[in-house]
Image (cartoon, rainbow, N blue to C red; front, side, top):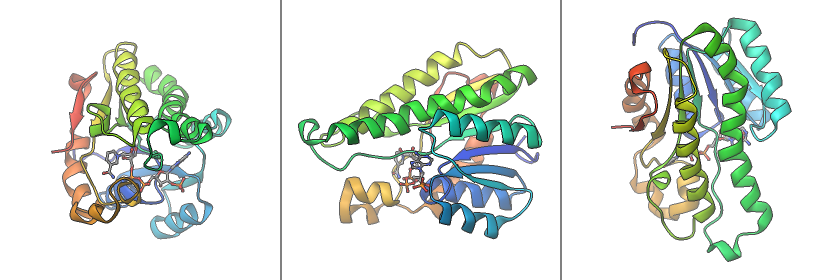
Length: 229
Ligand SMILES: NC(=O)c1ccc[n+]([C@@H]2O[C@H](COP(=O)([O-])OP(=O)(O)OC[C@H]3O[C@@H](n4cnc5c(N)ncnc54)[C@H](OP(=O)(O)O)[C@@H]3O)[C@@H](O)[C@H]2O)c1
């Protein structure tokens, strides 16, 4: 399984875990269709990895943008074998009553609604074909909580519930799982941990552990709550 060339869709590819996944999986011979909001980041990745990979400017919180992107990706090369819902953002550290309503909404729109929009755009083609794996990137904070990140925790607990419910909707042959990636030194971790983030491994170390684990996920794990070892 691990050796086959897969068609892999990844959201949030311009930095952090998504970028590390796109670069590593492309170098392993898989074909990537990735997205994020930053045009400069998307263009840089396009130049770096080139054809047959495709990178698009898409805000996962926009249902129209997601649907247009999914149509183009599926028309271009068929349904994904693996869909990694990785795009996410975290609120600035603050007790809930100090988080502006706009910021709370944005975290929900990207982390929870964005994950749902991407699944609902790609899953029909995967269901029709009868195979494929959806990995929804959750968090340790989708299974436990900490102060100052309540909006983020709420969305990641939501991602877990969403994943397990959709897992009961897909036919045999597909899998929808929630994945806790661990604790990795990225811009997001710096927002939550400050200077302490540097004590954690970086994306380059993480991706070497994460990729074999993710590529091994199969239909038997449908509905599982997984963690990168
Ligand atoms: N780092 C950790 O320790 C850790 C722990 C647990 C869970 N996670 C989860 O792992 C995932 C990746 O986190 P990370 O640490 O790599 O974060 P990061 O460094 O902040 O990167 C986030 C990525 O998501 C993209 N993104 C953000 N909003 C988007 C939107 N609306 N539409 C499309 N793309 C969007 C960003 O690109 P643009 O700004 O260009 O859009 C960027 O490429 C997230 O789901 C996060 O919750 C991370």
